[in-house]
Length: 250
Length: 219
Image 1 (cartoon, each protein chain N blue to C red):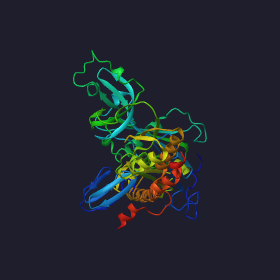
Image 2 (image 1 turned 90 degrees about the horizontal axis):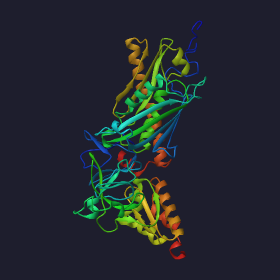
Image 3 (image 1 turned 120 degrees about the horizontal axis):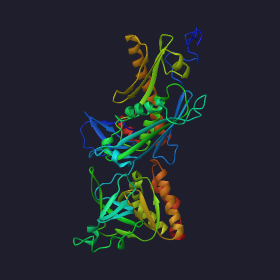
Image 4 (image 1 turned 60 degrees about the vertical axis):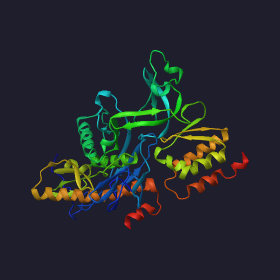
């Protein structure tokens, strides 16, 4: 690449016009797939991701059965048409890795001990990809699990932060991810205040790391509010808070 | 309530789908919470069927082995009906033919005899109303909505069978068998679909009554 282009404009805004700590537009919908036990769809910036949950069901092949808990399987997959140039549909090294980190981001929230000897399958299908698809995938997958009615300690919500033009910014898009100098996806369980995923690449000073990490958590909690809203809409409609919720505030 | 929500604080007895953290009671599923003198309860709105002892279920025989029948009970666990529960203590694989009683594909009503985390649920057909189901239409619904279909002390289910002229047998596992005149079966199926879809609307009985309206005298 010739001279690296500036990713933050003169007026302090980013290439897509966002402020340094602004999220891209996000929309969430729960329960679109009829055949899945639970499903959710997320649009996060240009990301379009469908998550589906099947199970708990019997484990095949049988030798993978865990006698005391459920086996959580995840597959993160990018559709061939999700990127500019056709992607080979076979799972790439990157997708296998992301499947693994998504699994590990979700397991702490799912009460796998309640479903011994079964399998719970989570499919994350990226229909159109942008930066931060793994955190978007985690966000949708945890909604799909809740939709399937699987016991969970908390929802899981993700958000990424990073370094662009040596400045900490929230929620990197594709360009910033590729041309920026650092990316940090973080997934949290917002009520428990626990981190379930933390990946970092790039160069960070101690201060920048702290700032990016705290920003990712703060932004994650913003996304959590939207997650709540989507789940509530599916199960309780647009109606006023139910009597149960009233009782909570009392 | 959604998973992770704090239902209430204090000191209560609490039921399934709830976890206690310190003095907080946390919901583990999407559902409606009830806090009363008796304790904290969460009625889930989604979820798979997990067997519990003494549940009445309806299932389909999917396999026969030397010692009993394997029954699909619409759960992640297969039910097992031991032959000795059917033929009695003197059962011996050499003298009794299991397929003379139930064959693969037969639908049976049964009771969950025992279930724990370490073994598949065991079924029994001892008692009134259990055993092979010979006729009827099978309808499935979300197992978490079954209590609504039955209603308080069976009020809803009695209303439906009275108005449609059908005999409705409900399994806790969300499998329902309806026997009766065809138009009654269609009506019952629609009502079940209605209850399944209705999220938590108040006056469900009223709506069902309205739908079934004049059919008590009409059919």
